[in-house]
Image 1 (cartoon, helix red, strand yellow):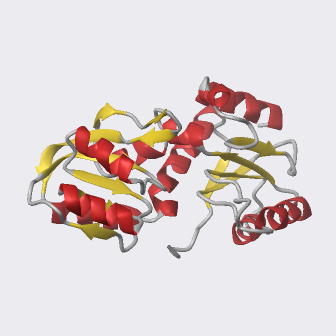
Image 2: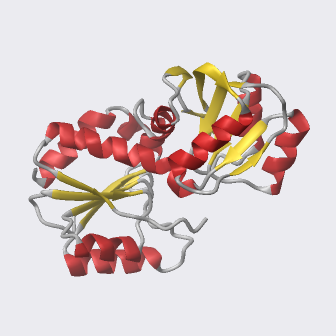
Length: 251
């Protein structure tokens, strides 16, 4: 796959979502690598450690959900320097992946064994609305909490604020810590709200309204979307070698 084929495939996969969000802010392709791409490494975040890991594994292109954040001062410049040094390209895709039919929210539902989706996560008036799905057979809070720990392979945080069984689930992967997000899940009749970040206000509001709450990490609630995107690229170019660049559970 050459770089032009990659860009064309991304346009095909995401369609209008690329025109809905700004290039450079929400997605971009830094062409620091070879024109011919045979090996892709994926992760949620781009960091100097990820780039070094990619170089050790002879990766041609790193694809991530996040770019290096400007407010992590100096890291984007360091990442670009390392990408150029090792001759590795980088593509990141943020909000388009969050709201794609196959994206971060859908992929976490699938990983949890939820196949009935009622509402996909969408962008509305500058904020995210949760994806909504239902288990075929309701679970106890303890059972879904165990599923989250197993799927994310990390020690998630959870608050049981209701005794109800869990059938309807609301999810915003990553930074879904707003009380507005919890209110949206409450209004949609969800029995539990799942996200990847929390604040004091998240916990207080969930307790106040009786919403069961499970919080994984930002990184590992979103990695499944990157895995699905990698699979879609593999479907188009079967010879691609895809590897998961491993991130630490630091959150």
